Image 1 (cartoon, rainbow, N blue to C red):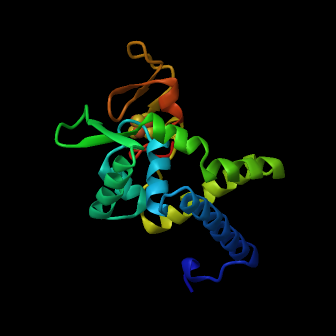
Image 2 (image 1 turned 90 degrees about the vertical axis):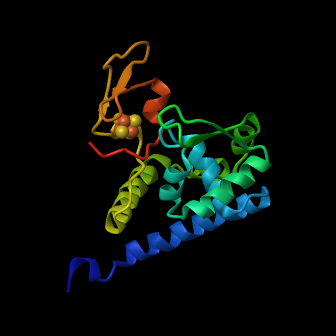
Amino acid sequence: MKKSDSLPTANALQAAHLIERLGRLMRAGDHAAGLNPAQAEALRYLARANRFSRTPAALADYLGSTRGTVSQTLISLEAKGLIERQENARDGRSVVFALTKAGSNFLRAGPDRELAAALDRAGVAKDLADDLEAGLRAAIAARGGRAFGACRTCRHFRRDHHSGAAPHHCALLDEALSETDQALICAEQTAA
Ligand code: SF4
């Protein structure tokens, strides 16, 4: 029997079921706020992604969805006034999306904040975040998907490699990176 075919442990199965329930809580909160799950995930992604990754193509990869479905999701969010399209400075044939002020305000009261506050109250946030990140990486690797990890953990991230006014640098894209950029997620991120 191959390793990937072996039965999961009881702990791993329980963890998978708990993750499913946590996800359901988030989705219930999204529905109550007037967004379907795809719209809510897209909005949260655009809030966390860097300027190279806020394209429809990167969002489709992140959600594991088709370009057509993602396009409909983005049109709905635009119609609600939560996001706006901008010129893509790196590719004139494509656009990038950014949250509007209304979109940022919407997220400040989002169900992810409510869930995060509950995790803080339970005193499990730090360990849980580390463990879930490791679990997510393993699950994505098994499917051959992109990690979309934080910029500062990327092999191409050059800390304090000054380039103009920005403190950091991306060796892959040859772009300056700010303090804010280093904490954002990126479609091109490769673990160091
Ligand atoms: S250093 Fe890596 S994660 Fe950061 S912008 Fe460059 S490719 Fe993306």
